[in-house]
Image (cartoon, rainbow, N blue to C red; front, side, top):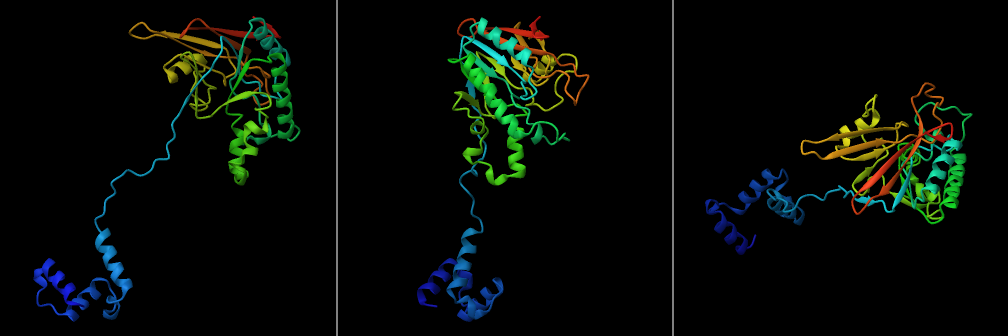
Length: 313
């Protein structure tokens, strides 16, 4: 080694004065478990320098986060027709006509599809009857439903919120055809021609609201969160704010005041599909829909309808 390196080494470590070059190399060879001849090589020089400089290196920044910002979708319109749980192809035609006709009568300018417009029976993880309709059939029939909806309400805004049955498609793709996941042509909205029918998609991670009223499908907290007696009360216990849901296929309402006198109301809306399905022949389901009407900048009025045999009760 040249004199400059020796001078620098002794200046930094005066206790090594008198150590010969070979002693120095032998000491390093023991430290790095290698031959003396290799200590002189550039490789071991860089390994030695790297170890010296990375031994106590600390990062100055936090690691990059994969968390995403959840955004709120504000539902627009003066009168919003809320349709939950249509479950094409198991929709009830009389109940649907009743709901749509009332929406036309009340001059609704917005339609909120609150989840489970499709049933996705063939994509279910549960045991399936092969005699039931295929996923291909469901796609075509759901498109026909969207077309009819647009025919009846040509200028209305139509919002689509995903329910647990709608999300079966995404889960199926990720489990059985992951190579297609993320390809735009296979997105749910493109599969069902949302652009053609001018339907506004609400991202599954987004929060839909109408003037402070949260609009959810109802599956977001899991399958057994709602009260067996009053679904709306179960929603209130989770949301702690005014909210509306479907999912349970039952009409209910629950109101409470807090210690300061503020009133909070939650609603669950009936379904527009068969009320005695094969998987639950004694289900407590009922047909229904809701209309939310604007009453000023931050106020609204909810009418929660029940339907029996195609007629509003």
